[in-house]
Image (cartoon, rainbow, N blue to C red; front, side, top):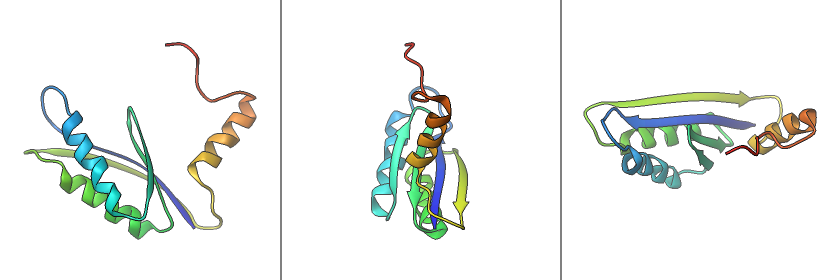
Length: 104
């Protein structure tokens, strides 16, 4: 089984959240997950839903503040293993190109 999740943890504050978001990302290192952070959150992969939930909980608790907002979207594929990069590759095969633009 493969569990892929999108996690976004942020304090509700004025100004930069980078230092607090970094604490949430660093908290993931204590778990048996792989992850990649992007501008909108962090994609987490694990072999079990329990590991994803434990990692997400630790990330949430790592952020200081009077108010913390956490969003967790889970894809719990129970019939076969499919990693996040395989999902992206499938879309890219359909597109016939990388799933990103060259505009910046």
